[in-house]
Image 1: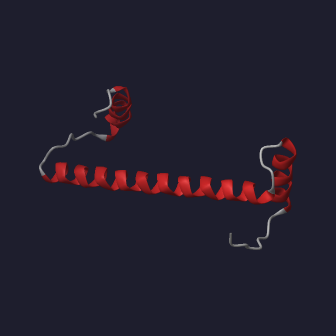
Image 2 (image 1 turned 90 degrees about the horizontal axis):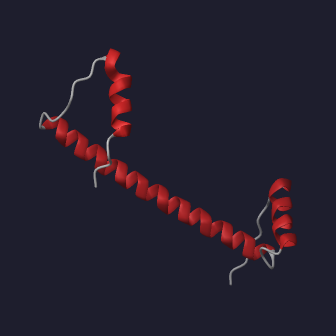
Length: 91
């Protein structure tokens, strides 16, 4: 297994020490590997979210181009947005 030297802040080091004392991990390497797995998962979820947002923007832009939209004036915008929250989600 490759080895790397890393620098931690005192707070990060204390956190790892606490997790080791609690028995959550056998050693610091396990704790750091788990942290990297969590980071990888978070980044993958963020990428998926961005992909979904891009698709939604593309669909919304296409709907606008087709004239499928609702004009809402400033005075009614809050109420209109509140109504969106209460509508059932489309699947």
